[in-house]
Length: 304
Ligand SMILES: Nc1ncnc2c1ncn2[C@@H]1O[C@H](COP(=O)(O)OP(=O)(O)O)[C@@H](O)[C@H]1O
Ligand SMILES: [Mg+2]
Image 1: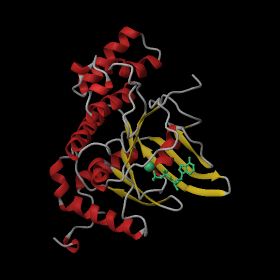
Image 2: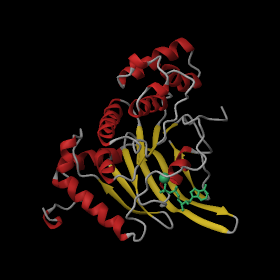
Image 3: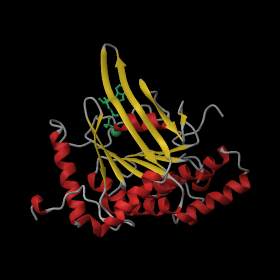
Image 4: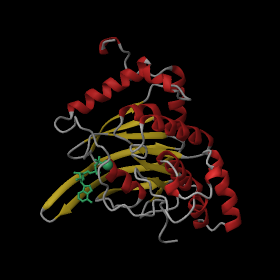
């Protein structure tokens, strides 16, 4: 099929248009308000982000895409409170972010469970941070492990689990602390294609069941289209919002939708857009080294 025979990716099927309208009526959980970030190293200045404005609504699933170096990781680290802004601010439920907090959970690309704790203790960690007793935390942790089908691995250690299983634990560890927002940076990039698709389906299933808003960074366009309600496309040097795309796919999502005209039209547009950004964009971000990742991936409030 030629690109010309594909539908306009901006035309939403009626059920999707209705869903988008509903989402926009919900309160804004995460507000990115004129955010700019400049890194200064010796005499070099890098404008990583410039005037980013974006409102993310309750229970929305937002993906952020863009070529390597466009500021995706910087943005999510700012959202997590692991990095300060140079200008502008982040608001969660209307309250300015001044560092990490229990209202935001984070899952990185690398497997970052505590290697010395068994799976159950890893999940309990986030629950106990909230002041819950050990007995109750263990009960809750087991419920979370059931949701991702890992209850029989409760007393296994992270190294005994496959990559996909470790990421499932990392996701429920973050969710168990009951954050408002789940932040994910290339969380499935290290997994093989089949495991990755399974993880995407797991994540959407969990997201449907609980009250959580998700911001998911990826360089994989298929992944972004498959997961997101809206896709934020960042353009590099300096990182700016190029376009916000409303994904024209019904929910619940099925892998078979990846060959639909709507999917292919959205992908063709995204590919052309990213190509138009010019040099160095052929090879997309493979999830290169992150800067200063703390071992504690669960974002916790140092002030409390
Ligand atoms: N801690 C840092 N110090 C200096 N420069 C940085 C730092 N973090 C990111 N950068 C620079 O900011 C830009 C955006 O980086 P990053 O957010 O990692 O992009 P992406 O995740 O989209 O690949 C890049 O030019 C990168 O080199
Ligand atoms: Mg990155």
